[in-house]
Image (cartoon, rainbow, N blue to C red):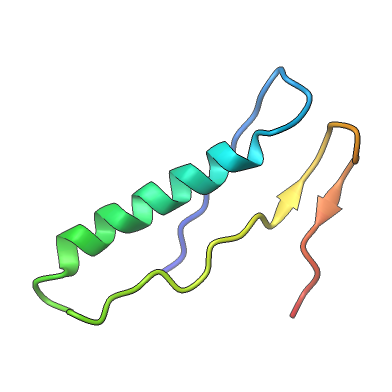
Length: 64
């Protein structure tokens, strides 16, 4: 399963934490819903894939 979050802000920086929080809360909600069916359900990866704007400009996570 893949969960994505897209966020926008008028501020210059720091919005990636809100995106990570949104994805993590969604993943925890899904875990809560399926834990009775699958005891091994887990969050495996949570990362920022792309970021644009701010002082750093555009950044894209390198492929593994």
